[in-house]
Image (cartoon, rainbow, N blue to C red; front, side):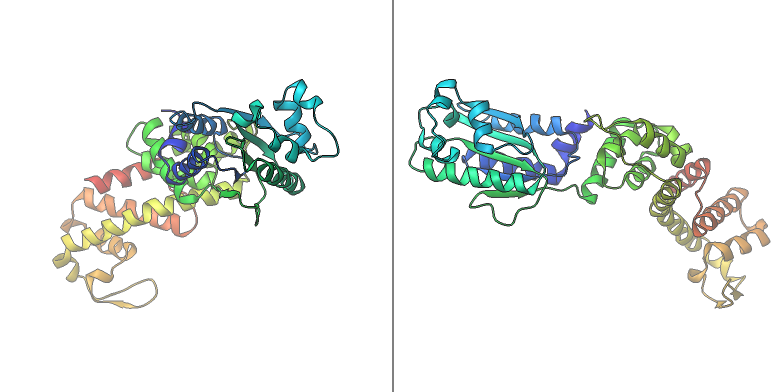
Length: 354
């Protein structure tokens, strides 16, 4: 499955957006659709809308037109979607919206008109004025055009039109990262790959996907891999990704390791204490790194555990000693804002399953 199909076919907010648009088209209700300029997999989004529309809108054509900044909306519609005869019948003393809305004998009445790329608020206001005039003039008609105004600006009042506001949310990106990692990545560290890609990409699912496509390179050297991808890869629209600084990438990769590995370390610590409670009590009380007296095994952190285990190694197997050593080293690296080496991450995640 392509990443665009995952984003527009499996993600909650994406599915809700498609349903909202489909409902407006089905009910022949014009709408303002606000989306980010870097809409993920825009072509796949349009395909998903068209697929839903096919179940109810067969008698209407959908015309998706890119907006030409600074033009007049009415003149634009007259030029793009009307015949030469309809253009010739227009007289300048009438507004374009009122004229076109009064004509129930033209093909425009059978169209869903989807205008894309409205970036300036001034242009959006002009479109709202045109659609308002058109709807007013066409309110007695049996059939009239339905408009979808796709823009980047928010609008408080759309003159009775539905307002659909869509943004890319972090929790949707997390679900996407996990689903895409399962689809693209082989091996046992898919959860770590997903966490790295999510953290490094922020709220850009296309960058997240580009990072996951790097496979094991992302695991072995996340910082360098992310920097190279941001410099060389392109989004689905052919645009470069936002620049990423080395320190920013290192911090993001560290955060991903903290999110994934700290729970692993804590679960191992608790399981170890439960398993060796009796033996550990023989070596208490001791002082921890803060100078506090530890009398209960449950209060032992990884560092004091390491001290007890290495000082009394005869009571513990070599494998258990090495496991505690591995956890201590990883804990110290993370505590000092450093990355845990790939091989140690692999061993830690394997350790949890054993």
